Structure formats: structure tokens, C-alpha cells
Length: 50
Image 1 (cartoon, rainbow, N blue to C red):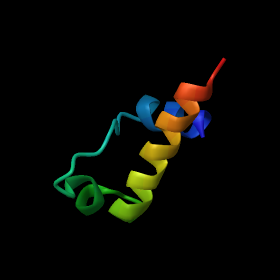
Image 2: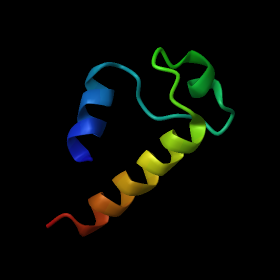
Image 3: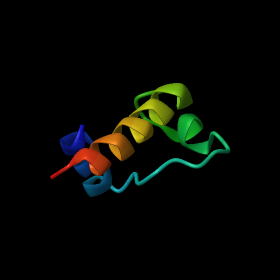
Image 4: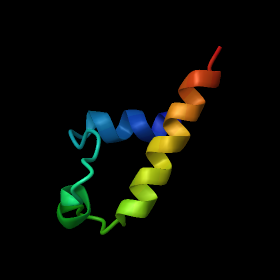
């Protein structure tokens, strides 16, 4: 998960907003529900990282 977030940030996409603009602009057509899940998992992984 952390590698995917790093790749996202290196590609210049950054985090999504709550307005859904990221879903409309996503070149891969990733839904906002998947983006939200990825963000939740990222936070969870960051908190448990040693």
C-alpha cells in the first residue's frame, strides 16, 4: 500500500478532495470509493508502521 501511495505522489496526483474532482480527472477511471478506501488503508498503515 505504501508503495502505491509513493508512486501516486511521484506521479503528481497527490491526495483526492471530497468533491469528487479526482474521480472525474482520473486517467484510469478509478472511483472515489476506491480512492477513499486507499486513503483509509494508507492512514492505517502509517499508524502501524514501526
